[in-house]
Amino acid sequence: MERHPIGDLTEVTLSKIREMVDVNTIVGNPITTPDGITLIPVSKVTFGFTSGGADFPVKETSGFGGGGGAGVKIEPIGFLTISNGVVKMLNITPPANSTVDRIVDMAPDIVDKIQGIVDKFKE
Image 1 (cartoon, helix red, strand yellow):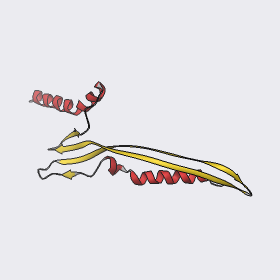
Image 2 (image 1 turned 45 degrees about the horizontal axis):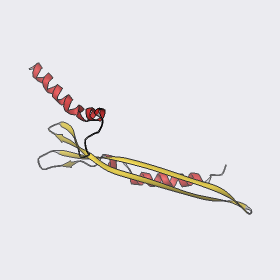
Image 3 (image 1 turned 30 degrees about the horizontal axis):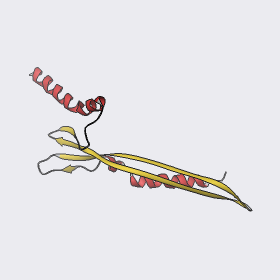
Image 4 (image 1 turned 60 degrees about the vertical axis):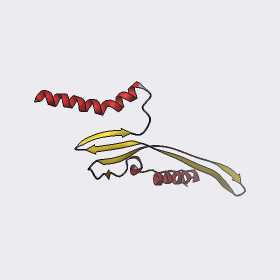
């Protein structure tokens, strides 16, 4: 069975997206400050692609016309900070709008506070 050109077109589009976006785009390389704090940049990546085509009857053979496109949006959202073994998320985006989003954002701090209370109780 002969390959259809739309398959090649889609493969090229996806290949170009892979070149633009990899795991280092989402979670960046760690940066260590002089005082020993490690910062890891975190970004939100949104992408989409499309491709399409049509076969056209031509004398003696068939013709194909097609096109593809892709769009990528990379938005920095914050840094993971690591200091003395404690990992926190430092957001650089505006606060979340919904109550659920705010609770999710506050969860690491709440867990740290609960752990502190449990540790004091054990002493």
